[in-house]
Amino acid sequence: MPGPASGTIATSLVLLPPVRIPMANPPAVDCELIGIREARRWQDELSDLVTDPEELIQLLQLDPAQLPWAQRASDKFALRVSRPFIRRMRKADPNDPLLLQVLPGAAELEVVPGFSADPLQEAEANPLPGVVHKYHGRLLFITAGQCAVNCRYCFRREFPYGDNHLNRQQWFAALDYVRARSELREVILSGGDPLVLNDRQLGWLAGELAQIPHLNKLRIHSRVPIVAPSRITDEMLSWFSHSRLKPVLVLHCNHANEIDSEVRAGLARLRGAGVTLLNQSVLLRGVNDNISAMENLSEALFDAGVLPYYVHQLDKVNGAAHFEVCDEEALAIIEELRHRLPGYLVPKLVREVPGAFSKSPVESGNNK
Image (cartoon, rainbow, N blue to C red; front, side):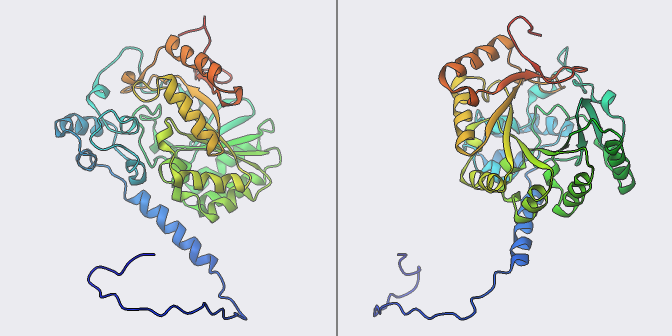
């Protein structure tokens, strides 16, 4: 039991047997109020992101000598990171694997041959604003132009989100595009990060998609359940899982340290609602480019009810060359994972090749 509060005087208490008073009418749970509180919490967290490199450096007690380069790199691609994610970083450790994913740095300013603004040539697969259609049977909606965290290796760091910010008329055009293509079975909500949008907007879109008879799956790609797990609310679960479309959530998690008790609780809620949970990570120099990091990640994901799905080789976007891991090293890590883990915990090593019909396996002999 807690002791007396500081500044108060303890008095003698006479302990009596507990008295149970039956309640004829127990107080009702105000579900609407709970929903409002849930919404306010995640919205407050996403409106209170750290966007100033100086603040991040101070919070984590890092060397202030990093600041000038961090500010210059942030001017090109803004710093954005949630406070729950920052709380999982080690203070005074410039090599913390979570920090390295979000802190802008001097290496981003280097111009490296082979790296470009649009490494996946998505502009050629953007038939309508908000629609990216690259693969048979599925397409992607750009539902939001921002994230709860700006990952420094993001392949869409120079994507023209302004040209893909849809008004209501354009959303109807995007939905008509799906209706007209009966070969489609799945729509993927991506961005940016779709879960930065509110549940009213996403619920409307999910409802519209559920009315298209040839669709049978709704997939979300999101980092928000990792960086802001309070986003998993009753309202979100309602529109996502209470639909005829089978719900799939593909997380983006790169290191076991990203998964704490709050993340696990949010993922348990999703799993309990019948959502299939998968993870895709990116192999990143200095973050997870060793067997221990990848093994721990697979185990931590499985403990949280998530199956490792893909590990991607880096997309060659401007500013991210310092994260690149060569194919030989990547293949060696995956081979060692096969020796240590059961097959269902070994993610597929892939890269995305512009114009290909699917993600391309990285195998010996086809290194690029």
